[in-house]
Amino acid sequence: MLVQVEYQTVQKWVRVPVTDDCYDYLKFMHEVGVVDESEVTDASFSSEDGSASSVEFSSSASSSSTVITENTKAQRRRLAEGPPDSKMAKDIVYVALHQKPGGEDVLKEYNKTKSLSDPTRRKLVNILVADMIESHGRVPPVNVRITYALGIVTLFPNLKDNCSPTGYEHFYDPQSGQGYLAYRLKTVQRSTASDFKKSSLSAHQGGPKTQRETSTSEQLFGDGCKEAMSIMKHASDQDVVKEKMKATFKHRQNMLHDLDQSSLILDHFPRFLDTPGLIEQDFIMLFGEDISGKFIARWPTFYKPKVITVSKSL
Image 1 (tube, rainbow, N blue to C red):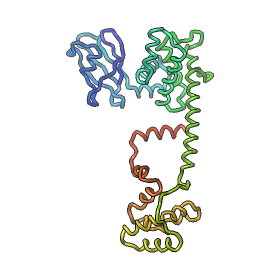
Image 2 (image 1 turned 60 degrees about the vertical axis):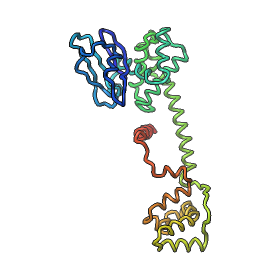
Image 3 (image 1 turned 90 degrees about the horizontal axis):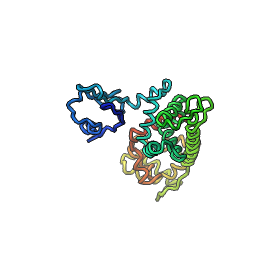
Image 4 (image 1 turned 30 degrees about the vertical axis):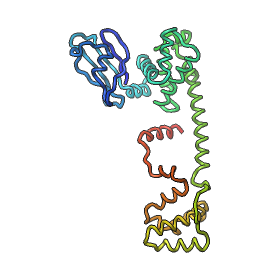
């Protein structure tokens, strides 16, 4: 977590050190530059999960020692809901550059040359568009795009276009919908749409209707298959049921791919309903041990918001 620090009239951004998954207060104060920690009272931390909205360290000796931050998610909610604010926009761009790979290089080049070369400017735009999409989806609202553009020219004032009304139109112009940020967004959206079409086609080609080569042995057909199906309907030994189900696997697959027969599977193979493990057994025979090991695996919970975000943008 990054927090904005003002200590003895000096402002800067400081990353809060973490030790054993906890914010380390003493290391943080060292990063701030506080020598005598006894002068700082009323400390609280704001984490990015929204558990607190601000941090303030007030000094009993002087009012010039303050640490103030605003929760990043709260900032982004305000960004999406209200008109752009130059200070908030600047902070969002600054934090994004600190958190994304390559962002520090952009800041260093500007601090050194007071300008950005074309490759570095493209890197800046790519980083901020990635951050924008991560926070607001593939089609971020117009005021979000405006805020990022405003943040760029506020953080990097030499990039401002003095000939335009607001100075940030070359990064994003809300009237025409053009600018560096808009061009990059369109490129990412086209690329994402293309990838989705390819993955959809691939998923369709490999879907449940696809005929697969299976490594099965001792399969029964004709009268032998009918006899095995009759035996397992009345068998009480689960091992016998599983053996006969293996031997009739190919016949069952042919039924599944027949529109007239697929709905009758449970009529012909009712032991699916009362014998545990038969579905998993068919799955192993169809896909092999490696893939079937994930048959009943639980997805990590972090997939949930990503799936929801992607589905909303389709």
